[in-house]
Length: 412
Image 1 (tube, rainbow, N blue to C red):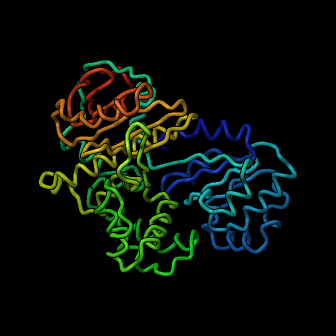
Image 2 (tube, rainbow, N blue to C red):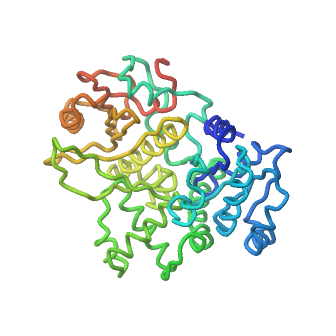
Image 3 (cartoon, one colour):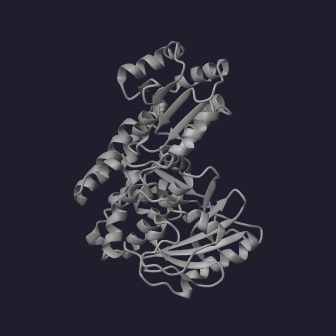
């Protein structure tokens, strides 16, 4: 079992919060982690089991009767249980009574959000981060918000080695398959399974048969602005229906929509969000990108690299107690910054992604525009690319290898 760095947050939440919810995509390791945290002191139930699910849905109050504390896996499959949990923890408000897991963002379901508001802490668990795979403790985000990087070093993971790592993604089951084609088969079957089995637990969609085509279309638009009208036209849907279907996929942690960052000092030209899959390996498989094709299709490779960086930063942010909010940035003309991170103090870090070994001053144009617009809030601008060293490119501007996302800051 790989170390899961979310464990510290979950332990802290169990010590002072009545209900703790581990939310994340299917097969990200939630069940394994919840079992490990429960040990022999906390009864464990999974609602993927038909009999258990029927018992929970048929008599939720009776299901919880006599339970001092419990771990309940895939709780979104019996939403009736959540109101019973609310009543139970209101009568007995001791912390750590219920450890829940689920493959849906419960806070997007109004009845759930209202019933457990103020009683539940949500801790996300995404597929494995590269730092978890390597067993390292990187301080990338802390160094970025403090603008404290050390120039130099030599990256080890570059070129095809880096691309292979990115195409593999972070799902533990997929990574257990050494052959790339076997991993891609797992990705395809994974998407098919969750679309057939899990969507009905989240929302009553009338055109379930269109979901596979929608996901394929989104894979081709990965890393781009989302035009819901055009997306709907491709599938003979109206704009609102297309947006609703994408929102359901987002609530299942399959994709994430990044809003644009803006300020009064710079007019925002677009209200369109940017879409990323939550796993780069999954996005690459759905887009048909292999190592061989990556040598020819550099645009597609660049989008997957950007998704990889987003996914890694999203995971690093999830390990922190202090939140980080993700945006993208578009300037007045063609300037853009792939990712804009904002911490609880309002500090901003811009991250640009480039799937090549060279870094030039021109690559920092968008980051410089962002720095001007953000003013004193701008902490650092970082170009992540397939280079060897950490290099300064001006005040608070750095170029550095992708490897810095999972190596300790300051390591050679």
